[in-house]
Length: 374
Image 1 (cartoon, one colour):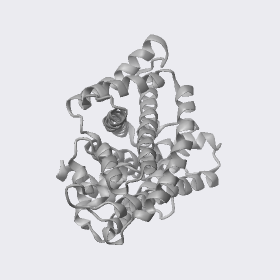
Image 2 (tube, rainbow, N blue to C red):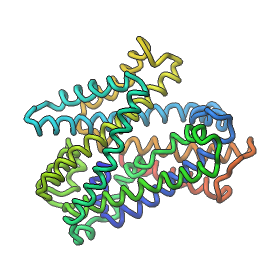
Image 3 (cartoon, one colour):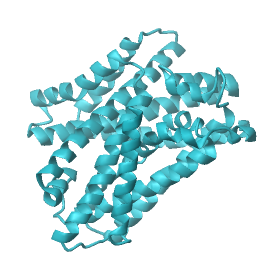
Image 4 (cartoon, rainbow, N blue to C red):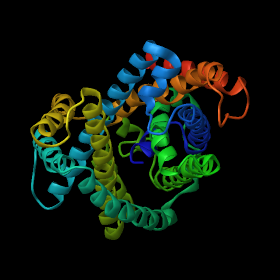
């Protein structure tokens, strides 16, 4: 949410919106492939077991590595972005923290919530998500009158090659489809609705958010959005530019609150997911001494990386996009092609063999583009 206007500014609003739509369509197809594959197996399966049953040991290894690297990379991004927001809020109340101090304090403070377990994270996240939605709507309404039509004319579609992975990461919801299958008790009609509608709502939110931010701030120049792609602290820099441009204390306060909630909800969700994944993979308890060991294993690698490279937010999201492509696009399409020869599907993604081939081709193009930019 926070990275999209920064990533899309150089491409331009209209051009990036078309690419957002394309990424949404492909990632939604990937989610439907995951739905098809999870229905091959008994309830309670996950991406790892799905890859093992359809693609064998090679699929299992690729899924394991992609899953692990995706979660660690996302955690790097959210620790970096969260520390940025945390430090900016501290400055707001005249407490000045170095980058390493804000990074360490943010990770320890909110890592303790994760250590308390899923109930604590759930309670905190529920309240934060309601607040996030309300503040988002207020910000869109308050910033919209400041948009200038000529800002929408800026940009060049060629810049999408360096930022498309951030767009892909924005639709990384498919990882929870096996859990949704259990929640909705194999109701295929409802599951299809949940995937399609539940993914389309964020698409609309992203486009509206891009419109008000890109439309109210210049792309080029010393205070342009394009420069924030290479800023050490992109989220706090975006807040400062918006404050200088809008000159509205209510918008400033709401934006600071919104960025804080965005980072915190993302951090808590990914952290809990990684702790659960490691607990399952290592067959250890998420509680007590073993739970504390899991917390150290979850936070130490990304924390060390961010301490040595504090401006990792945008770059980490780009890297996460590559693992999203492998785990949520390429593997599901391959699992469908192989699974249809071994299982009788209760649900089949429309398009026959053509749709998985299209998704595989799209995935390979994205991965080739990613390698060429690394």
